[in-house]
Image (cartoon, rainbow, N blue to C red; front, side, top):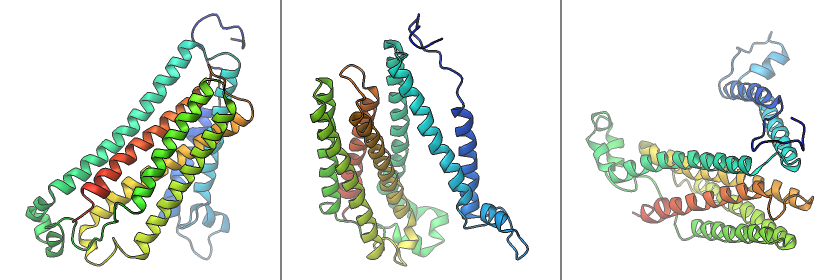
Length: 304
């Protein structure tokens, strides 16, 4: 159906290459990850340089090609969605279903962190039971490490230093993105730009502090002493939770940065700005997740 000739409440999308290109890119990227870490070819002196770079262990070329295709798919697909919105294809029903889709996406992300918290609480609340497990009892160092909390060999990160600063940073960013959203709803584009720019700066600041904290953990050897190796599950759990959340913050910052560029270019109106609204929802999601991580990893179970 031609743009501008919508006769019903739904939008039938035009044929699109992006699902196929994205699938190919994701497949190449996953194969590339295996190549990068393990390699898919035995490299000898007779192996051609091309085969070595594409399939030899330690070479990220194949992974990079796949990643480039995936990023290209992101750009092209979302560009088409923006064109559809500007052409009037996003009717009230379509807009509602876009919101449903974003809600379900965030719900799936919530369930990932629910699964992680399940692991963490089992590890923390029942750590002494690990010393009774036959497979662990047979390894004296492991049983001894789990007989106390935190596990023997770990020096935990003080909750009210960098983690508290990061918590305040994210809470402040939640207020600035809400300010920007409200300003956009009332047509104050200048305030919306200021609020969104501040949110992006705070997101970058959070990531920088997180990187500094990780560097501190590595430099001070907080999780990597010889004794800590007997209870490596704690370190794995810590980096999985905070690292994956940090990745979400990075994605959210990029999400907001794209919205900021679009806002500078005249996009979004008080009645049509779901792209920005979705970014704000996502940002509030990473805010709330961090509050739980801070409360339980750093405060409640972050002290001996």
